[in-house]
Image 1 (cartoon, rainbow, N blue to C red):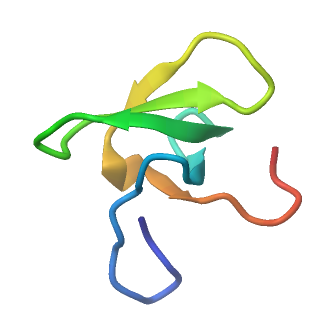
Image 2: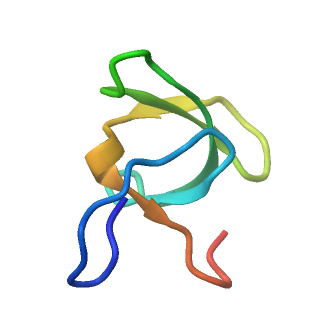
Amino acid sequence: MTTAGGPRRRPRIGDLVYDIEREAVGRVAYIDTGGNIAWVTPRHGGPEWTALPEQLRPAADGEG
C-alpha cells in the first residue's frame, strides 16, 4: 500500500482499503500466495472483486 511520499506497504487480510481503479472501498478478504492479486469485499455488501496490490491504499477516515 502507499503512503504519501513513502514506501509502499503490501495490503494484508482484513485491511480496509480504497481501490484507486474502481474508486471503491472494501476489505481485503484474501491475497494469493504470490502476493500478486488481492480479493476485496465491498464494505457495504455486494460481489467481491480482484485488484492488484499496487491499486490499493489504506482507506481514509470518512471514505466508504
